[in-house]
Length: 612
Image 1 (tube, helix red, strand yellow):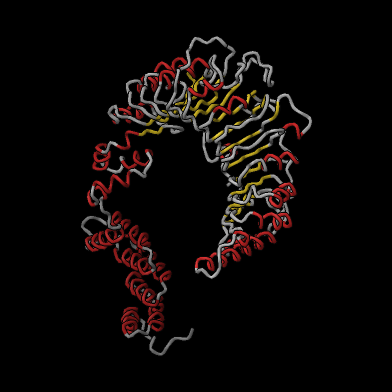
Image 2 (image 1 turned 120 degrees about the vertical axis):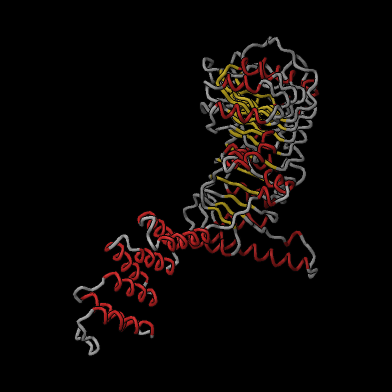
């Protein structure tokens, strides 16, 4: 580059001075030219020139070049504070306050205590850090205690424990708040025994809820600790100790209303009856991996009445050394109900012992395709207050008669024993309860083809609101279409779940949906539908939305025959023929579409949303 006529001095100070004058006038481009020339001169004061050039770059908005010159200053002389100040300034202008604070902190670490520029850097660092810190107010001091207690009710025990570690003030406040210590949940949480002992001590004997699954080494110690808590109302306890050791402690909790128990070596029938007899306030008894014994003449006497018992849930397991086939197990009782209805009394008298039982769930473990436990459904018909019945891997013996007031029924992997080849004979005289609202059928071997149609149409009124068919290969789309077109039994259906019906296609949905005017949720994973179905569902939503607006404005009457399903949720994992564009279109039109695999366990779905 040819020299400018003004740039003819040999003294670098003149270039620096003239460059500063140009910078003050706003001529930054020419000012940079003079700074560059100043650096080329002999005996140039590099730090002064870089300091001014970094300032000019900052004025021009070239913060990366300004930062580069500042770093060069620090590298040239780390004890000159101007380099740190210029670097921090460039970073602040670039909206990087965290980086600028780091530069100030590094400068304070490098510069000696008596450095002339240290006080300025300390002041700038303090102002910057204070500005970066958000304004924090202690909610326990600002908010009224009543409001704080209301908020704390929505927090789980684990969160409260973390809050106690924030500061001593929070720790004292939370220790004075009794509510969290009434409900302690240690289940699947790696909490040392010492800490568990401390938390239990803080409840001051008023513990109401306890959930724990201690390790094999700690189980006996935990039982010893909780022995004195006589006010426990809800206990969820799982361990590998023998049932006798656990029950020695648990049977002293006379206030128990809910007991969820899983012990090692199984839970015998004697133990179950002891629990029901010794804990009269029990409303829910849930036994995990309970083992039934072959001791018919057990010493325990069933209680005469259990008026508080509302839910009995048992996961029935087989003794390892016993054969695992159905029907022929020698230790199986003649009346194969692992509940208090097993004494030497008539069926009606047995059910009179549990007059308020609303939920019965019995499950046999999955140990083989033929595994099941025998159950006489005739015995259940006396359960007039039963609302929920869930049966897993049951072999029905004798006539199939459902309790009369059932509202939810789940049959999973059930069969007849002995099997009846004629499908019509399997369901001869079988009628669904007249108040049934929810039905789950999964691989029920004796309900198929025309039998499925006959079973559903046995409902006298269209009370069914939820229907789930899972792994039900004996029911095809035309069975459903024939059902809805020739009967009104599914007219009030709100939730339809059909999984594994691979032949279900767009044409089938077009024939099916108009007959389900109240449908809100449609779950059809692993089917053959395409984007055509999504478009059709969106069109139905539009038609029904318009109709509802006219009904609200009283332009037309609410004619049931004109209703169309307004589907809000569509579940389609495993539908490989659906394009992403179709899914995005449906979502853009307000349809909630779930493509991911259903995370809820099979057991959760089959129990109507009731977890073990």
